[in-house]
Image 1: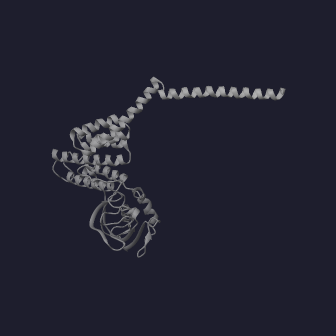
Image 2: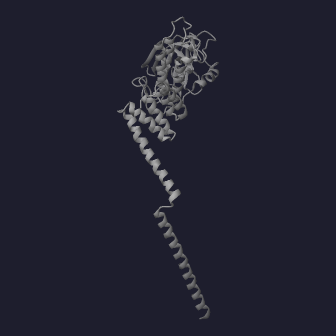
Length: 366
């Protein structure tokens, strides 16, 4: 079943392993003294990110993880084909807002610095590429300028509209990673989205620090719906990773708010099937069917679970029969046949011994 109305459907991806956010500080230390102007420098020592400074920035102004950065960039292929061009883009460093090669490189830039970057496929768009823009396994070239750096906003101090904007931006980025099969990165984005969309952290139920008017029930309801959507999406990624207990927690959050959410019920059934609790899976599917009788995914999953339950009953029946009724008749026949063979083998051996004795007697007294 696809993601909900705020989701994007996807197949699994087998992209190569890429640098995780925790590696940014390590990469910074490795490259701190290597970067020089007018020369290409290998930031990671593997050829994955090559950098050439075009304009020096302000010394000692490199951003830290999760700080808010504003960047302008132009992305092209190696043959200068334009891929994307963005001005004054807001990102949170190391938070999966851009491809990982760009995340690592921005951590090494000073404010007002402009540089060229050549980023290998495994830290760019992998073997999937970007539809109609980047072919699979393509190196991309960025011309980037770091415009400014600011501290991360505390979610509870933001107006509700800003919380919704940032929370849904993180959700959409999580959907992007999910569609590429990068489920760990998708989950990271979804969790960050919940930081902004969760009203229990304060600020939302009272006038905001910015002086906005007190939040209405409609505002809180809208925030709740966005949060439910994120939890549902996160469960889909967790199921892909077979993190069934974590997925169950996410889905229970959804179903506490929306007990008849068909996608959540469907995914909860898949979790129970993964944990081999077929009865619980069927219970969820039956409830989903009541609310969406024509849903093809639900009907297919019911068929799958029914087949598994039939096989399970057959195995249980056979175990019970063996425990209380003894072996099957054909097993009795096998045992009887085996006993007869042993008897005939014994008789044959005795006859053979007797014949050998007679021959020996004749030779002795002939």
